[in-house]
Structures are given as structure tokens and as C-alpha cells.
Image 1 (cartoon, one colour):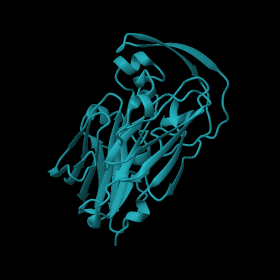
Image 2 (cartoon, helix red, strand yellow; image 1 turned 120 degrees about the vertical axis):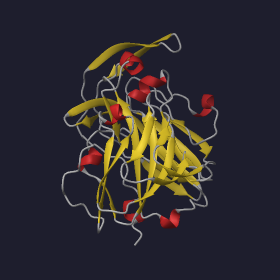
Image 3 (tube, helix red, strand yellow; image 1 turned 90 degrees about the vertical axis):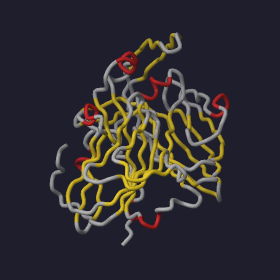
Length: 332
């Protein structure tokens, strides 16, 4: 029995801490060494309650309302990061639209001191017109067509871009092919997995020069281990994968199976078969599909094992009935 619908939108592990905003503020001098430009950034240490994403559709017009805000998120057990976010989560909410849709994207900036923007990899648009800064307490709306199918990154493109990316302002937009994927009828389960790095909090020099403290799937190093993805014996599983970076590549690998079908960047024309590992550059995406033939826990990792050891591990739990056994996931 096809169980896609029951798990279609199991996506990012959303950590919601509804704590009222703090009131301490700090001043930090940031230098964009790649441009040779000094950038003064006033960083507000607040904890804003997550604002819900709003998406409405009228025919092929899709209206997406997003919020830039600062919110504490848990990146490891008991480890909080005062993140720059879209809608209070990092990665931001998964957006799902169709090839041929017209996107009306609105960004409201609740950050009290820093401008933010929306750089959407899924569209053709002049950045100087469509990816411009939205100032604190202001709102901007940008319109462009989604003409290419795939799994794409979106992020804040405000300079210095690395500062905004490493602080958490990134997410995934899936543009479904208008004619679907050739394998749609075979797929039983669908999930979204992202990879990103976390460095010393809001430290631009660390973002540029240091190794990350954590490399994680779906924003933290514990969610997809404590709550494994589920499938049953004989299922074909589809994963929408994106490496959000900002700096490392991902050697995406599922232990115990082959990636039977891979659509590079999620485009159905970019198809490969029988891969053991998919190399994803920073911002790169893919749709990967594979069969699971036996019961057990299947680790999902980056085969850059120095990064896997920092947290980039998920568990796919396969049982006879597709239900969670409640047993601890195996480590890898």
C-alpha cells in the first residue's frame, strides 16, 4: 500500500521555544575579508517566538509570507544557539510549489537591527531587484516564476552573506516537475533531509576560518536519531536532500542499500542509477530513491566521516509494518 501521503511533509525537526524576547544587546564589528569591506553589524540578542509560515494558492499564483527573526534553537542536547532564522526555525520551513507557478514571496523583517533578504535558487531573477535587503520592521514582496523543477536552496543574501548563512538563514524549496518524476508510482515514502554546519555563535572569524562545532541533519544532531524516519520492508523511499552549507560538501550515503535512482538537483532530466554516494556541493540538492529489503536500522550519513562524527547522522528504521519499534537507534 502506498503510504506517501502519510509522511509527505515530515520535514525539518522544528524546535519551538516560546520564550518572550530578551533585552540584552551587544555590538560586534564584522569584517568581510572576501570583499575587503568593514561591515558594522548591531547584533540583537533576543528570542522572538516563531511566526508561522503562511502559504496560499490561487490557481498557479502562490503567495508565501515569511518572517526573518532571531530565535533560540537547540542544535544539540542542551546546546542553544541564538540563530538568525526564517520563521523561528533553522533550517527554515520547507516550501513546496509546482513547476510553472508564479511565486509571490513576502519577507517581513522582525530583526530589530539587521537587514535581511531572500535569495531563491529556484528562479531566474535579477538579484539587484528581487533579492534586495528588507530593513528592520519593514516588509518586501518579490514576484518571479518557478520555471525549473528541482530541490533548491533559499537563503538570506544580505552582505556579508556568510554571516547570515552561518547564523541560520537558509532553507529548501522543492519545485515539483509538472509531469512528475518517472518513478512516482513506485515511491512509498518521502522525506526531506538537509545538512548544515554550526560554528561558534555569531563569530564571523570562526565562520571563515574554523572547523564547525556541529555538522547536522535537519538543524540538530539528535532529532533524526531519536525519531527515526520510518519505512516497511519492500518500500521504495524517496529523499529530497539539500546541503545548505555554508562551507562543507556533503557525501550523502545511505548505509545498507544503493541509491537506485538519483535526480541531481532534483531535475528529472539529470538522472543517474545505482550510485553508492551522492556528492553535494554547498547549496547542491538531489532527489535520491532506494529500496529497503530487510528489517533493521539504516544509518543515513555524510561519508565525510569527520562531519558525520559531529552529528550528521540520521536513522531510517525499517520494520515489517512500517511502525516504530520504540527501540534506541543504532549508532554509526
